[in-house]
Image (cartoon, rainbow, N blue to C red; front, side):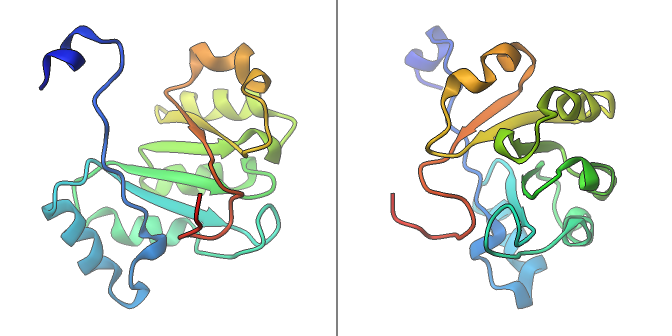
Length: 158
């Protein structure tokens, strides 16, 4: 580790590939390949076709891949009413759950529900959303994802 990171409050960068760009016919092989390549975790984008225009997959894919690798699973919920799928997502093996502050007026309640289950929690912010929106809860978050593109499709230019 470099001296800069040892003396800094900034944690070293993490490599967290998203399976959204994987070959869905070979997901098990794909996650094993990224683990061997040195990824720090795997990013799952769960999209419902309502909060974002695209549909991806649900907690059952997270569960199906949980035993394939030992990497932590970061699950990014791009869904309306994230509370509805918190339980199944946690039960599927999520280690970190990110949800959009724009998706629910009950962000604090969602945050507490996730933490009570022993899972790390983060907030995702759309590009137009001010960071001040989450100022009151920053001290409780394990992660903040500031989107550089509007969510819903992988591979966008930013």
